[in-house]
Image 1 (cartoon, one colour):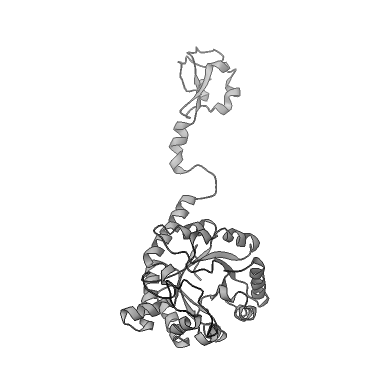
Image 2: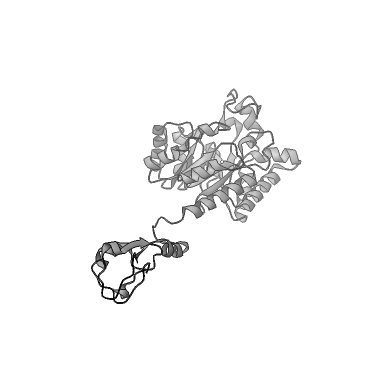
Length: 347
């Protein structure tokens, strides 16, 4: 995995099928078009989903998404539309993605997919839907690759069980993604403070955010997630949010991701360095806006300075008021006018 923070994942999923249909091109060609745009946008990883309808869901499993956006009534029908790819297609996409200089992964939803993806993916991504599928989690964890696990619609105890399963299988590189399993997620339900909870309760793993909030002009949801400490940020990616289909209606277009990246860079800029010191841009202001000890009257050489002879005034080019107790009681060495900024060579 690239060493970027936040590490940004474009969840292409199966959105390219709809683009292929609209453009009248082959799905593999459309998938490569998505990869091109991911790379051009500056995203770290292109992510897909690997499954077969018959191994992921029973035929009568009902829809759990917004059917006004995606009208398919059963999960089986929906998955059947997008399950034509297998090992050969994903290997070609893996090689193409790496040729673009970015990382590749695909979420496996069955053992066969997990096995054929092993020498392709830069890390395994496990869906929230498999959080309680501990045998499957152990199977993936034993492969010795980094694992990123979404933890939507789960109790903290279930997250703990999944992390334990990964560790027991030998997995040492684990990341947890806060996720809300609702498509799209209303901003009021984003519950981003869970990022802080996960970081506190699992201090030895990376923590991030898998976003299902519909993008807006500001992309502030992702910015806030980053501010709360998200190391990895994943969001569904599309070339056209208006397309009908599984994930387009809550996905981000390239321009949305560009805005998010710009936000991350701005946050890094304004956060700066945690060391409290004097910045270069403050040096003149520090000198001119701080105070020095200034005489309140004319004084003759040999006179002793009294407390009432002094007043702290700007600029800070003379003796600091910090030293007033040292200055009081000393003799001036020469005649000095009222409002003189005192320096040590005058006494």
